[in-house]
Amino acid sequence: MTSDWAQMGMASVAASVRELGESLDVVAGQLPGIVEAINQLDEDVERLVTERGETGAALGRHERDLRELTATVKRLSAQVTWIEQHIRSSGTAQVLDLDHVEEELGALAATADAGHRAADQLLSTFERAALEASVTDHRDAAARSRAAVRSLLDSCVRLVATVQGDPEHRQARSDYLAARGARAEALREVDLLAPDAEEARERLSADDTERARLAPTVTAGERADVELLTRLRTKLTAAVGEGALLPAWLTEPLGPRPPAGESRRWMDVAAGIMAYRITYGVDDAEDPLGDLPESVGGYRRRWHADLGRGIRELRR
Image (cartoon, rainbow, N blue to C red):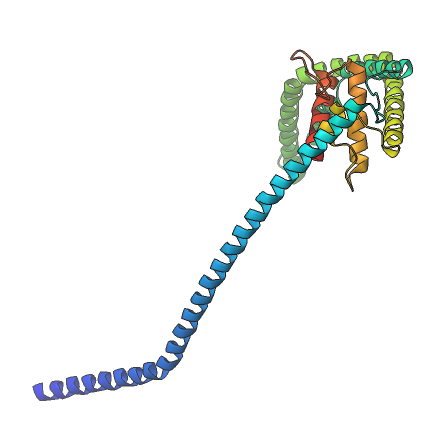
């Protein structure tokens, strides 16, 4: 019996050896392909290393070119500044005096500013929307409460009209309990929302009264604002077309001429700066907007920020 087990073990070993031999034959057959793939991978790695070196060299050249271009732009800018200063001091160029405020333009600026200050006293669109939402939420809760009362009364009528124990009676009782719970929930919501809704109604009513009172001032201000900016744009367009030299407080932040593709934006910002200086009496020879007092808020601060953003965008 031991001999039989030995023979079986030898047969198993022999089978394993045959399987291993077959596996080795398969691997041996795949070795040429594996070697070829490894060689191809080595070539790809070598190529990538070469390309990386070439890319690094190209980036280095581009960085040098960029530094040289930046230096050239700085030199040209300095030369342009020197030429502009020389032309201004020579008295031979036509310099547009934008600091001289015509009486009519000053009146338009004052009217526009009065309209903006009046508008600042009113609730914004966002504020009114929030208050109106509070009123609507309270009104909707009250409507749900009234609907629950109607359902409650209807279920009471059905309870009286049906016999206890009947399916209709049980359904009526179920509806009664649901309506009572809904009414209680709606009443709690009404009570919770009532204070905010009442305050919102008062503020909206007061704002409506102020809007009616200030409407003529706001409307006149809007018309004056449009006319002022239109006249200033016309004045600037004529000056640029005639090649007039603009004041330093305008050319320093915006450049002497509208850039290609940005002429409309340039003109809007330039006219806005002029209107701002006229409105608030800014006479700084270098800073287009002058200092903004810390106590200033409302429209002037928003206008100042908007013009500053426009200047930064045109400088890019």
